[in-house]
Image (cartoon, rainbow, N blue to C red; front, side, top):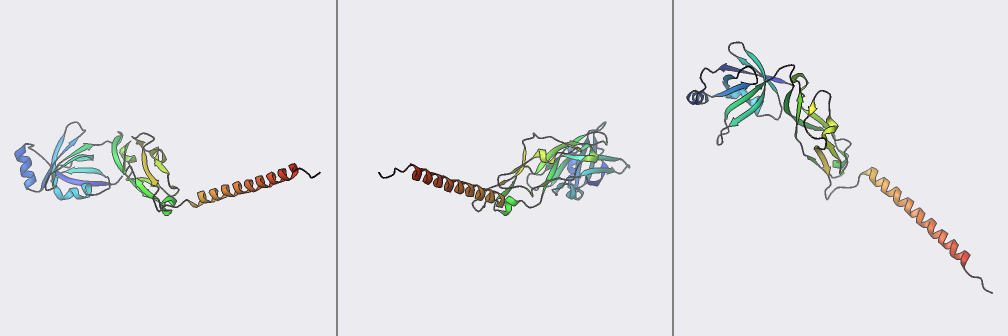
Length: 223
């Protein structure tokens, strides 16, 4: 997984007055949990744009002025209810040998035959929660929909990996191709239907011929 670096400064005071002063100066108060003790620091609001305002997920390296570097993931973020400015950010420290839980975005690839035939692709789960060591965290989870026909569904079992554990039940649907008013029957299915109809027609003709023979045989002769 890609990582970004956020440069910050340790906070000496964590009171409301000091926090308000930081925000007025264009900085965001932050806390790192998960280590031996919480780490309070602040960073410029603009450095969070590549972390917050993006559909991608990243790990983060918090680099402080005293040369301290901590690997973390975003845990929680608070926004102002009116201005949407970032008010506070919580991070969680990660370690190379410990698994972490994270929501990873789903990326759909391929062109579904069902969609080409007029079906509608519906993405049910845009993110999947997984558990893995940091080195095995993927940037995204790829779902190939090429073989999907109208009515087909993709379950989380189709993207299972040895690198991570998916924290959803096996019957969780990632996406499905639904029918629509403009949908047409898949070519393969159409050929199968035509074949079945042809067989039924042949059987019907054979039945009629057999019935005709039986009638002719059973017809009484004139005396």
